[in-house]
Length: 437
Image 1 (cartoon, rainbow, N blue to C red):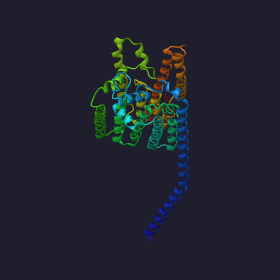
Image 2: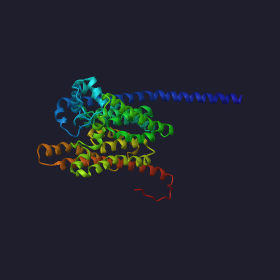
Image 3: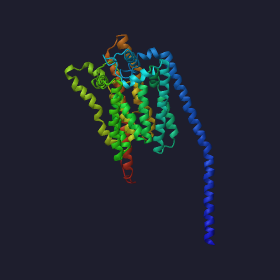
Image 4: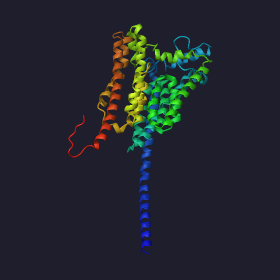
């Protein structure tokens, strides 16, 4: 009898607990739906504002923006692509001369689609919207994985940081192909954060076949997917995918390999010294010709030098390694644009667990904004007014890249500072007198 009463009391207690949980769920459900509604409204408002800004820039500012060396390069210029398509339709190889440096696959795709400029602009707006959405969802996945208290706030912040950023807005207005590159990178980030290795590798193959440098993203992928089978799949899939992309380009170019020299060779040799926001063009306008090959090797190997140290040092946080890899590509590529940095800068808010450790946030942010504003000014003084020289423009781009390097330094300091704090926490006692600088 006592046992039956005990079971009855336990059953009633369980029932009471279930009732309390159901009551709590019924109370929190309206709050959750309210928060989701606010999130949707915030994203929709940002989406409308971003699209409006892009349309206004396309209508009223395109002539000015098309002259900006910071937004275009030989690898992302829409005008060069259109010239190559015109040559292709006239049965002239676009790879004759020094005009066209795109993959044959892009040439065939754009010549087959044959969209008007306004339709292309609408497509670019859609691509940029999808990029912002992929980045924001990726940031939310990372925040939830790390137990963030407000992953929805991270999603909103990342979406706004990309879609309301003036640089992607201007890049869409000039129809820069960097918009497509950013979409591919955003897809890599999304599948990376989702833990889907196969589509992540496939998109990395596409990105690496277009501009080579994103190949270093394989390092954070190896950290993200640590099992031997996954790593073998990563390396093998990357090699196989890159070969498939090469063969596809070869077939698209009428089984001719002449595109290799005008695409990958053009990137590695740095043939075009048109001023841009990178570090390479100015140096090779000053270097003696017989030293050129040596310094080319130094500059191109420079990006690979950081892969192994970062792979070992950041092995506990693959997502941070991914952000830093994107930063390195934006700084050390041969023909960078301002839009190359838009993706990794938009992802910085998702690293909220390191938020209290960086030391130069305000200084770096102010420096980057100042440099972006001064670039057109220095260009005008040098090229238009003739009251300055190349040093004026290069000084601003140099400081801009130094500021990006300081972002990397700050992120790595935050990572190691957090690691030291976690390790040292178990060693502290009431008698410990220790100050960490």
